[in-house]
Image 1 (cartoon, rainbow, N blue to C red):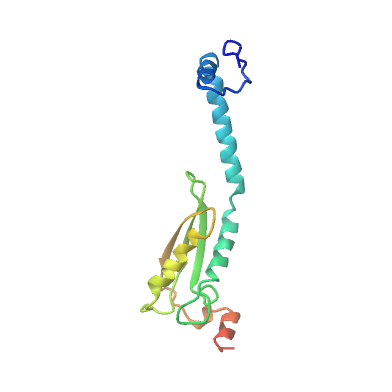
Image 2 (image 1 turned 60 degrees about the vertical axis):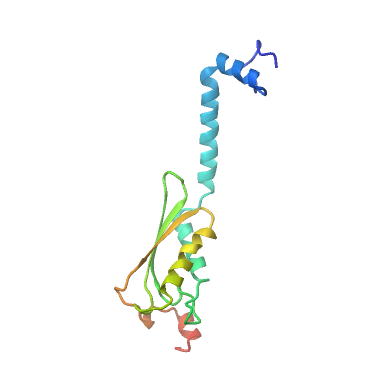
Length: 156
């Protein structure tokens, strides 16, 4: 490319060409960069799951985490009270808060269970963080369990 005959739609390939292009079209290069960045950001946003879709993905992961003392996953056991997901406006990734309980306030595996729930972040793309809130009101009871969980424990 002849640096003296640069056109706006030319693509500079050397530092001299880039310098000449920026001198001749100072605003064009910045607006092209901004447009490309916005286009890439929109593509990224379009690929992200909705809040509801992320909540469904979280449930799938929770169904793979079993209470170490029982042969039932923590979701079917009824330990999960609420899952809320939203988009971090800066990173455009999902943030989630899980409100859950334990079968007992003195559960010796409470930290293990919480760590397993938080580890979902490392296995789910598009997820930036999970905050886990342990509550004991309302207290957990067998009524919280799904029929599948009751069947697995011989309660049906």
